[in-house]
Structures are given as C-alpha cells and as structure tokens.
Image (cartoon, rainbow, N blue to C red; front, side, top):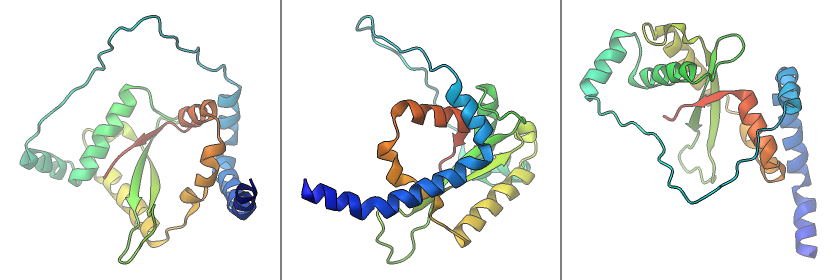
Length: 188
C-alpha cells in the first residue's frame, strides 16, 4: 500500500500535466463536446443466444503499378490515394463534420537513432474537404504532407501527455469522445 501511495504521489505531476493538455485540446470544440455528453447514451446491447455473427469484409487486390499510376494521375502519392479512399469511405458512412469536412488521423513515428522510448509516436489530424477526393488529390496531398512534416519538425508531446489519464476515463466517456471527434484513422 505504501508503494502504491508513493507511486501515486510520484505520478501526480504527470496527471496534472495530462489534465492541462486535455483541457487545451478540448477547449476549441467544447460546445460540440458538451452537446455529445448530454445526448442519450446508446441502448445497452444484450446477447440473446449464441448465434455466430459474420462481419462483412471485403478484400481487394490491386496491381501496385495501377495504384501508383492512378495516384500520379490524381496528382498525389500512393499514401495520399489511400487517404482519398478513406476520405470517400468516411463520407459514405457519415463520418463527416458539421461543415462537411473529414478529419483524417495519421499516426507518425518520431523514433530517431538511439531512441529507446516505448512509445515514440504522435498523431497528426488533418481536416480535408472530401469533395475532390476521387478526382483531384493534389491539394489534399500537399495539406497532409505539410501537416506531417510540421509535426515531425516541431514534435511536442501533447498527444502523449494525455495518456496518464487513459486509465481513469470510463468506457462510456471514451465512446462519447470517439463519436464527438469523428476522426478517420489512416495508417502509414
């Protein structure tokens, strides 16, 4: 018990920093967040029997040369074409912000030589207009590239600084936060 108490006291500055970082991140969108918290929670799901559930899935095999050629014809890289596809999928499933934009999330590795951190990553959120995601990707490509390069040059630990709070946040609040942010993750 003494060991746990010592560890708790030792971790308090990290928790305080995480609370401040969370407040800084939440403040700009506070009205959206409070309205999502006030909304009725989803109805609890109950299992009635042991039926097998088949989750829909689709696998597509695309020739790499064709993929790269299509990306180039749209004025982008292969990764930006994947972002464009994710953007269009987000529109199809309704993961669009009130202003019609889509937020794409890119996890970025910040690991450098001799870096021994267990978690050397951050995320970059890029808000894009999905209107031309299927026809012209050049603007989206530039916006994504600039955001990622800026984060890599000026990497702060704001994203990671909220992690000490993760174990203290109830599941229902995590679901609300995810629904509120309407973020589409993109993996590079």
